[in-house]
Image (tube, rainbow over all chains, first blue to last red; front, side, top):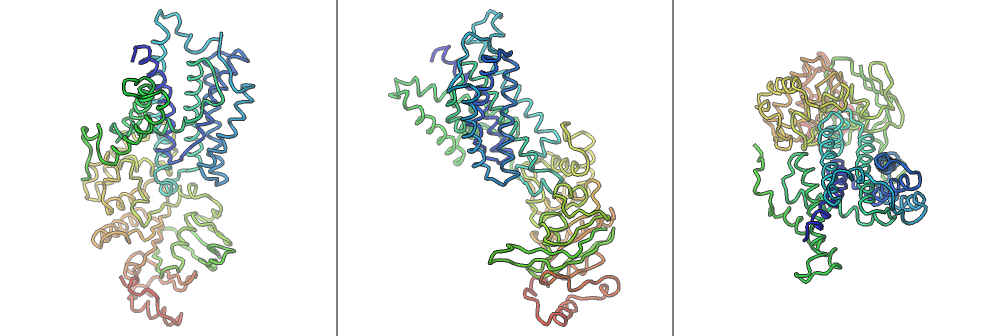
Length: 301
Length: 264
């Protein structure tokens, strides 16, 4: 693997690290299997691209608005579940399907190229360092910042209320926590992160596409499973770091599948390789194999 | 004072499984009184507690607290004034959070939560002081996850959490039923001490007649969704379990279906 490929893989890994953090928030913290991300990822890309290209907005502002749009999508899914008792998975599917049409409307077509316009990455053009070096550093910093903010939030009054709402709703209610509000905010926040990832992804690859959300939920979940299976995840900080590491590892597995001619693998084997990776992580989780066993774990006293 | 007035609750209404759970229950608990509630399975005692907590909606009737109608208040809103200890220690605490974080959650029931850090230094000291009275050594394990505690320890923590803050009513739903006899005695004794010290209005549902008569200052018996017996003062002081069974047979013309459990 060349340096260029390595940095490119890190770049994509960090972007999907944001998706993984969102998946961690919904699946692990809130116990809310959320499929909205299949729509909110391209929504972030579409909103950002449309604002930059059509309206000539500042790319930073457009990226921020994309995250807000993602929050609105996640909030709507949670509202369908909380207010109308629609099953969370079904509510997510409904949103993901409707967002496909909404994204076509936003972009005025199936895609929106970001050619000849400034993106957030162009801000660093004057630093004298090649773009393919700056991009992964910047994305790593963004992902790390989001990770720190999520960690801080989950230790605040609202944060522990959200953790309790997901882990034990009866106890949470008995302690005065509005479980519904926690779901609305938490699922919104997770989709804001996913839409932010979508907006950044579109700016890296120079286009937003209505189909770019396909499989995002699998990537997010696989990252969480791979990361938390292989690495220690007892604390929130460990778990969130593991999610990002899982996202990067996942991208490396994809890169391996695309480049491992010497192993007899073809580019078309990418889905098989990633599926094997996730299966191995799950098997490791069940059988206790993995890096985790090298770390000291607490025992009941 | 907390009051249930003409409460009617029917489960599975309009279906072949329709079951009347409460049939016009009038139940008034003056401020500071400790009431025990007894009854066989399906008598309506836990349903009454759930109506007070807001978990079960009423078909007819009103729930008032301190003169205010709270019938339509959601559970989380009522929780600011009515706290609860569940039968299952796993429900009353959050096993993924530390002991300290669980207490921070309980603290937030009556104090505003915000985007400040949930645990401050003063809270650590205050929590250590509170759990120390249990004599379980938990003051040295505040950063342990609650999932690492035994059932009895969790229930004791749950009880302390329920009595954290300004709540004036404590609901105890068979909170010693899932514990071994020794631990159950410890938790019950702790309950008596806390309720007395804080002067709480408490309603304790129990399946044990002996426990019902030896705890608190008033005993209420439910049967088929109605209160059939309400004793306090001298009448209750001299009462034994056999007297209660005899009274039940005399007024209802039948034996209790699960005497063994009730005598436990």
